[in-house]
Length: 116
Image 1 (cartoon, one colour):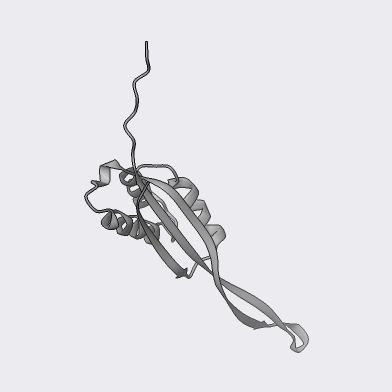
Image 2: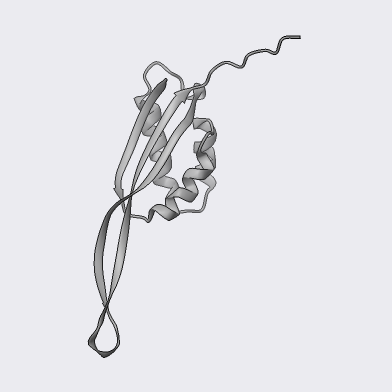
């Protein structure tokens, strides 16, 4: 059962760089992921923290301490195509990539005690 989801579309950073951050927080509790992101020296950590806070706010009647990141997906968005002048009157293409981030939070299940 998914408690809440949040999406960020067309974030102006390459998916390859955002996936590094997504891999760090995948499977962690929401509070622990936010604590990790505040100390992470990457540009994408601030929008990722904002996205987690948005998903927490979307989870109704569930405290943040009981939520964990069940699924986080980073896909490529639209690609802006620009050109840069090169030698002998030619042009080289530059691709400015964007990312779509989808995050799902779920409620933690209580741990079952082992039978003795």
